[in-house]
Structure formats: structure tokens, C-alpha cells
Image 1 (cartoon, helix red, strand yellow):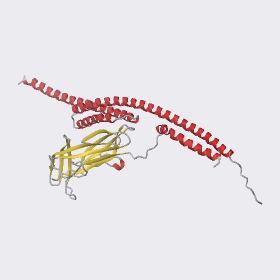
Image 2 (cartoon, rainbow over the protein chains, first blue to last red):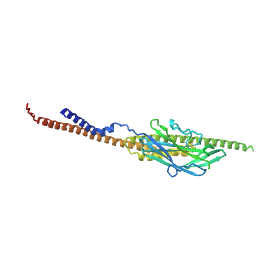
Image 3 (cartoon, rainbow over the protein chains, first blue to last red):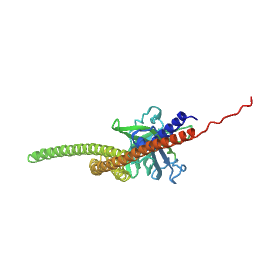
Image 4 (cartoon, helix red, strand yellow):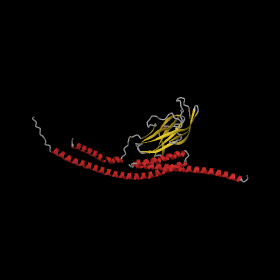
Length: 198
Length: 168
């Protein structure tokens, strides 16, 4: 190697050293894009806190228990609302594909905050208080969720394919959006099917 | 019988007036509940935004969020009671939520201030360290180059030309 080549090696080495020395400050000033997917989880667990043993065949006056949970992976603390809704098979579900929540009014709701990377979970107990049945129809008048009584007034016809009077208790996840300063449906919902036959 | 007539009319008027009174009271509590919920929602949102700012500034906000969680439960209860027509409970729950939300908001701004101060201090020290590091790197490279160059020339100048004898 001649002197010119040695000089280049020295210049490159010293530049690298300078970059290493300046890296802590640069990392505080320059925001590097993080290729992390931001999302939230929403889950329902059965009474034994597992993804099994969900209430299905339900009867009047008996209390059923599930656990509802949300996980935050949005990159910052988030403000959530979970709406608890009740429907018969002919009533609309949310459409996650085009961010449309179910137009049904919520019965119960939870509002909470979660730090990024953490989760929130709560038990939910529900009881059917007033149900009337005829040969081919069923009518749920009242139910309670966490000891709060709600008028439901929801009819359901006999499902001859699946042999039952079916209803669905479902949970919609809403997230507070700082930009629009309002809660937005967060494209997540889960539900459990209930058979009112027994 | 004639004396009974004014009494009947008076009674009817009283019943009518009491109905109006009950109706007005109900409407009043609905209005009170509505404004209490709106106020609570506004405070919760500003508390949350303050918490986010504090978080971005580097503060530990888990304690604040635990308190806001209690406020959130209150707000959810207020909404449920409102939908069920229990306006007194709705207003009570919303007021509780407002109180906690306001406290959390003030605390979040204080935390944000402290976190920003710490962040500025931390930035200053990091910058000083970086400047020193760069200066040392430049100095060391320059000195290293000077020493290297001197040795290089010494080595080159110290070389003796070799004479290769030719037999031809």
C-alpha cells in the first residue's frame, strides 16, 4: 500500500469512530421507523379461564360466567371501550372488513386504559331472567349482566338446522382515536352462541 | 255537594301540578346527568391525552393509568345507568369520574414536566459525551496519522538501495 491508500484507511476509520461516538445523540434526534405491527387483542375465555367450557345451553335463572380480555400492542397506552351486545341470528353483527360496528344498542360496557404491551381482563356474569317460549319461537325479555338488569325484548325463531333457539352475546372493541378525538370501532369483536332450548 | 265541587277541582289541579312537577324533575335530572357525563368524558379524554404526553416524555404512567381505570369504571357505570334511566346514579358516577379524571390530568401534566426536564438533562449529557467522543476520535485519528506518517517516511528513507550485479 502507498501513503494515499493508508490515508484513506485512516479517514474511513476515524469517520466510523466519530459515528460511533455520535450515535447516542443521533438516536435521540433521528426517529428510526420501527417495523412493528400495531394491533389490539380481544378475547373471551370460559368460566375456568380457558378457551373451553363456554356457556352454550342456557336456562332461565342460572348464572353463567365468562372472562373478557384485551391486549394492547399499539405502541403507547390506549383508552378502550368494550360494548356488550345481545342479538338474535337475524340481527346484524359488526363488519370488521369495513370497520362498521353493529347498529344494536349496547347493554353493558367497560372503559379502561392499558399500558403498551400489557393486558386487561374482567369477569362477566350473565343471567336470563325472563324468557317465554312457544312451539317455534322464543322471546327473551330480561337478562342481567354483572347484576344489572336490562330489558332485551329479543325474539328468536326455531333453527331447524341446528335444533335450537339461538342468541349471541358479543363484545365489540372500540379505541379512542387522538386524531379524531372520539372512540372508533377497532375492527375487533368476539361472541359466544347461546342455545335457549333447555 | 256544592261545597265538594271546588275541593274536587282543587284536587284535580294538584294532581295535574304534581305530574308536571315530577315530569320537570325527571327532565331536570336527565339534563343534569347528560351534562355530568359530557363533562366527565371531556375530563377523561384530556386526562388521557395528558398521560400520553407524559408517556412520550418518558414518564412512568402505570400508576396514573391505574387511577384512570377507576375513573373509567365510573364513566362506564354512568353510561349504563343513563341508558337504564337512573339519572341520579348516572350523575353521581360521572361526578366521581370527573373528580378522579381532573386529579389524574393535573398529575399527568406535573409528571410530563418532570419527565421533560429529565429528558432535556439526559439529552444534554448525551450530547456532551458525544461531542467529547467525536473530539477524541478526531484527535486520536490525527495524532495516529501523524505518528504513522513519520514512521512510514522513516522506514522509506531508511531503505538502502540494493545494487544488483549483472554478470553480463
